[in-house]
Image (cartoon, rainbow, N blue to C red; front, top):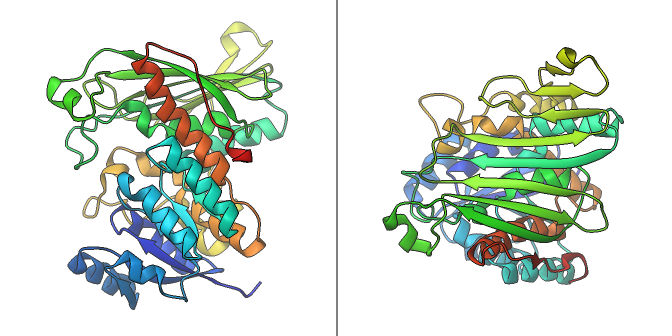
Length: 374
């Protein structure tokens, strides 16, 4: 295939991580960048040799040469910018979460159907090497029948910028909802969530969200499976952890308790002392075009002189960034739905939004919309 997709990146903080990936992808052309702060835009543009630059998002969308936008702007802007881009005839990749309301998630799903454009939420965990390892075990039949899924995302977000302080934990839940739904491509049907503990009063008043921890059970549609996920953002002593665990009838996969350790595989029917063993997680660079394989191990923000909070605390997202870019570009080239697509992204995002509503109602069961048929 000789076709190349003209990509524009919107937001150059975390977004700059993807510039060299697109530049080296065989089917992408890193065409344009967009950033409100012109000095930052020009510094990044000069660094990477990108000539087409916009400080106005609307001007970017008016450019007929732009095929797709990759949105890395602040969370409150995701839905508005996504809808504008779709309606301007652009394909959209957007960092998590899809939106901050169920209504906006529904509107994006409908806009994708109306415009015929592709949408992909760039959920890192479902392309992290640990998830790809569990997925490989599942697809090979080594797990046996999957019986239960569990995930967590714990993080100390004190000192993060503007919209983060006091955020309800489940409003940013896709890193733990994505893997439990994504492994078997399940659709969350309803959710129940409890809040626990309290954060400091100055944080509570920002979003009227008191809880230090929110923990939710998710029931999946047309499945005998449920999952358990929990989140904390403030006033909880815990090293950063995005964990994902799957329990099968033959083998189970458990995330390590401490960053940097190997995960644990439990194998049924062995002598008790042999059931658990630590197993190194393979790298899955071989799934990528050779030109971008090296990005699973090193990115823009991997050195001390040029760091980003998502890397300092996030461990580089498990080598997921080149996989995300490749899935998005491949879906456009092959004219197929990316994973996760709009309906899946809406489902995952809305689990967290409605889980928080459930917690505020003492654990009430709340149904999710049918995004597939919206």
